[in-house]
Amino acid sequence: METLKTAAWHAHILLNRPQRVRDALTLCESRGLVDHVPTLWQLELGVLRMLHRMVFRPETIGLSGDFAPRNTRRARWWRARPLRLPFLLWEGSVAPWDLTGLSSRPEKLIRHLLGTHHDGLQFVYDLQILDVYPGALEDLVRQARRVVTVDNARTEWLRDLVVYEGYHETLLAVAERALVGDFALTPDQAEDVDVSFSAYLQWCSQQPPTPRATWRAWRAGTFRFDRPLQTSPAARTHAA
Image 1: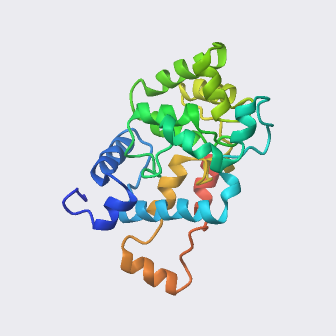
Image 2: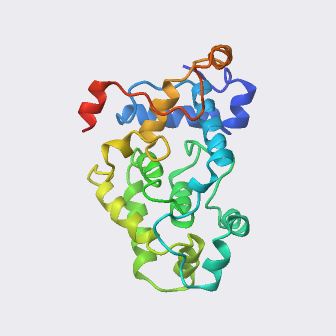
Image 3: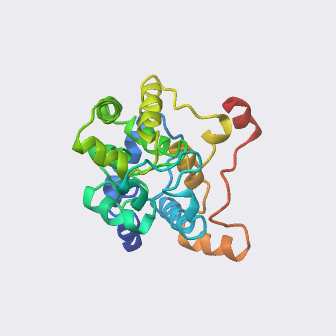
């Protein structure tokens, strides 16, 4: 198993805290979230995939395809993502240095979920990470319920910061289902690397295991960052 001492220099850049990432992966494995633990390099490819998404599919991040912005001045301003970003950073609800979410503590992930808009069910990625930490989902449910049911300056701030109506209500409903192991995903969503953390780990584990192997695969035309998760017919039958 790779350790902090054996992690390459680029792992410290792309994964931020590679040993904490490895410890979190070990916890995920012990909780049955992943069968084949990806290497640190494969996780780095997962981070590069996320950066590729930011550049080539930016419309999938921070915008809503279903709901209008809240009818407040702040929410209308913050619909423009460049105007929103400084406040997300100030709130501490985004961590640009931790794109996998694996080096963040549960309380940081909860802050991220409460203050950062995720379209559709994209927040399930973070819910699945929280699920491996005892009590973390329950803590999220308590805090999300407070945002939904209590009107004060703090909850109004969070509602405006996510911009779109209905976000916290949807987050609360799915988090409550997640408490009993139901993340509300269809079979297709469960295989969507943008939505499911489990699918993301599977995607990483399917990638070339070393930089040299990645270079060879890219030269051969068999490696692409936008390649979807490859699942076997048996896996699809099981998911259905």
